[in-house]
Image (cartoon, rainbow over all chains, first blue to last red; front, side):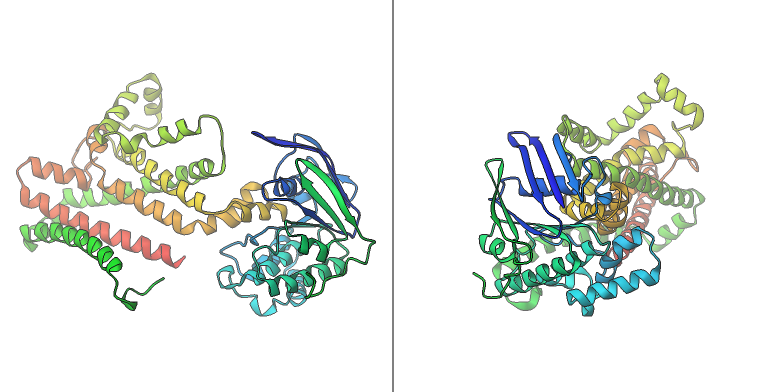
Length: 228
Length: 262
């Protein structure tokens, strides 16, 4: 599960105060809000890239507020994929496992498995410059999943894609989340995207979080290409 | 990238004209200098022990100071690009001081500093004033400021996001920079090195004031030219200048080619 407990963060005039958000294990939550409302800041606090001035971050019932990003068990997929420009797709997928000094054959097996699952097996030797927006997001997703995180955080992963690709990737995201039994927090400003994917929907506005949709677990697979 | 021959346009004509005029002017300077001297003069200078020492010291000192400049420029450029802190504008202005100061003033400042107790203490371990180490230090002070500027720009153009993703995957900040950001900055690092190297090779004022022109001790190509010129050996000064142009072109083309391949 993901639990943000009374998070407070301030930079200049911008302030998030006493924000609380909870996503039960295995659910797909979507956090909506206008551009500049603090969604990405909240994601960065969850990932450990910013330290909150108050409150706690709990992942799988463990208080990770003071733990470094790499020890939180969070897979992070940012908006533009944030590819590593000098690495091939294969190196992206194996990155987290190489850091953990896993044996080469285990890395190769896991990379192959992820590549098949995400439909990027033909791209393994390409570098990011030769990839389309959708392919980049698939690689970013595979890179985040490689070390089998407990939580997946997706920061507007579909916003830079055209409509067909967006639907395809939405279907993929939901399938992957379900198959891996992972808890997901997906950030977007698109209501259609949120309705398409969410078990739980939150809205961040005026420094407050409200829950606006709670769908029973397992019924969130409404993803269809003709979803509005 | 657009092929220039793709379509005639006044816009591209104008751009090519401005660049071409500048290149033609540079070429005219080099050709007129080249025709002022003879192959005999060039050969005589190349055979001179003093000039060969000067070429050697120029290459070694410029390479050393450019490498030292990189050691400063990479972390300093990263700091300036990725952080915000009170007094940052002042720090940036201070780092630019060697760029805006007249070169002779930099030499004078070095000379004065090594007369202070702190400077004297440093000189007990390494002697800088009027030594080859002083040549490197004088070149470093100026070239490092240019290298820092280049690296600041390079890191500004590289998003911090991939580095942050690497941190969520298990890297410390330092390892993320090492594995993700620095490989992406390779071309910029080569550019900073070549600028620092070129600047060091041509550095004259601070070297003259701080290290002096001592034959076979602190004489580098830029000071050799000055020495030959003030001694009335204009042909020799021109011949050494040509050697310097050829050397600089060779090294800079080699560094740029290597930089494009990485």
